Length: 138
Image 1: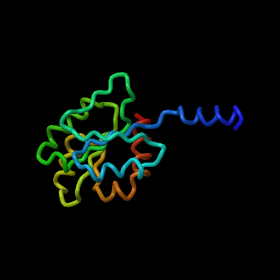
Image 2: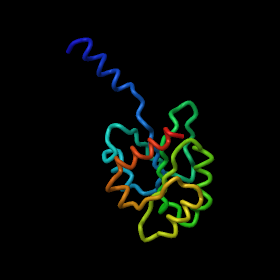
Image 3: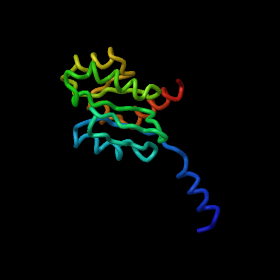
Image 4: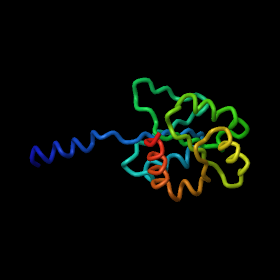
């Protein structure tokens, strides 16, 4: 391998990827997101959404995916907390299609968008691109 090949490869790896923070108590669905999102995104899963992660000096998430099914009746309290913690991030709520009221509540509490779990699973890469573009346009 030539030196230029090595430096080109290293340069590509040093380009920061958008950070996607997933807040969910579910152990199954979020674990599939890094593979589904692809290598262009850095997906971090935080399993204790009640204790929001602190990111001083580290990369701030471009998108925060909030598993609404993890919160039940706490959605109206938790959404504003997430917005306060990550004001520059796109906050996206996702949940079961049978909980339409919870999806609507999350949107009215400040989520930039809400999607069903099925829609997120089906189109995660294109949705993440769209939401990252929206965050960059801010």
